[in-house]
Structures are given as structure tokens and as C-alpha cells.
Image (cartoon, rainbow, N blue to C red; front, side):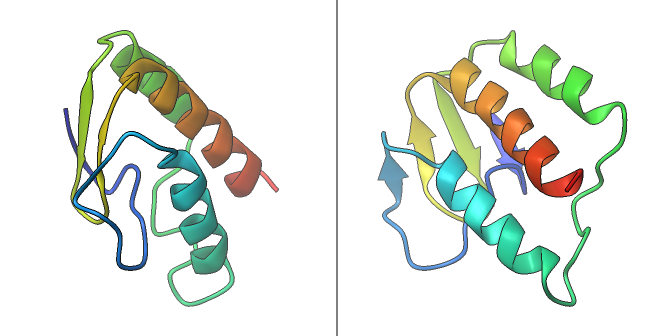
Length: 91
């Protein structure tokens, strides 16, 4: 699945990973929320349902625009991403 800015990661990471990309994303999001890039990702009442529909596709590869490509349980990663977004954006 091509993810654009979903799972965006800041820093110098490996090209491909099977480890946690959601933690990296959440860290980047928290950092951005404290600066001029706050709210750069749209977050509305439609975000969680949209992410749940994407998770239902059960992708095995999540190709990010910025950061490591994730190989593994894409469904769980997207579900965890939805939780991370909610925690940060609704705080």
C-alpha cells in the first residue's frame, strides 16, 4: 500500500523494516505538534473510519513517502496508527 504521509518518520532510518513504525510516526507527530507544522495532517471524524477501511485491506507492505517501508502485519499497523493519531490529535 502506498501511504504518502501516513507513517511519516523523521530521521535517518533503514529502507525497509519489520519493526515498529507507529512509534516513529507518533514521535514525529508529537514533535510537529509543538512547532510550525502542527496539524499538518488532516484529522476529522472521518479519519478513524477511513483508516479502519484501509486496515481491512490487510496490506503486507506499507510504503511510506518519508521513512522506512514496513513489511509485516499492515492491518495492525494501520489500526495502531489510528490510535496514535487519536491520542495526539485529540489531546
